[in-house]
Length: 354
Ligand code: GGG
Image (spheres, helix red, strand yellow):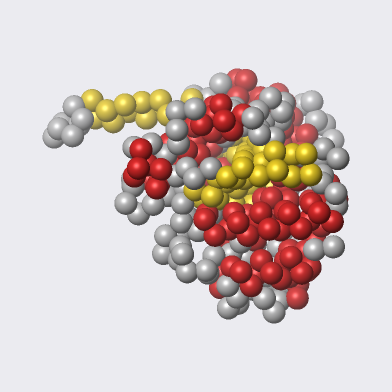
């Protein structure tokens, strides 16, 4: 039996509640399906920042590189500016390991109500592919006259032909593999962003020519946002820049019920570095420590991790258990209209695992 080494990074806020929940689910599914898992937990995040002045130690990436995959909870603390927490932990891992494909599926499960009327279970089934290492998150820029009255800030978006090509190709390959509508929608704002996103559009057309069996659509991000609400069932694979993919995947999460249910994978498709799996949600300081967090987004991210590690039976048993709990509807967390605690939802998933 192959033993997979998993780094657990609970991080901050409700991350400290949902990662242990997902670990219990992983342990049960792995024992049933004979998958070997070894966990190592790292207490990095805002408490580490308060103690040491940094979210992670200097050798964090070297230590993470020893593992086969990473399961992260959330980063963010009310007493630390958000750009410090995000740039201190999640973004350096994404960039440092070149995890260029952020995969964010959104599926309307039976038992979950969309805030949009008229959508049957399964009718909304899309995946947002977010470019994850460059674009608006390239972290290029600086301040001049910092904190002086004439202060200037420069923030540069970076679009490379290689970066556009590889993420767009990833989206087309996924559209071929998925049992879906075989359609890729590209989202930019190239009417206003006349360099980087014009390059993106051009590369999209070039790559699309290599996939004549996949239909395509190009939308400006404002139209895409409107159409995620107006016709969400029409989307299959959506590929977008780092910032637009982040924003649109909150929208795809809410039209399929709740951001608490949304998983994501930060993949290195070449498998040179460990890929990172996380819920889409953040640290939710308003409910942290109260046992109210929805663990299902992290549990579904853990299922994506098992799939990535080649443990398909284990992955589908976790997803099936989540589906069963949602369809049953008696044990639902508050964000899905129920009253169940994190522990109760986790117990229900554990009970449903086959
Ligand atoms: N689940 C990780 C987390 O804390 N996400 C919240 C967040 O702000 N993420 C920003 C991003 O994905 O770029």
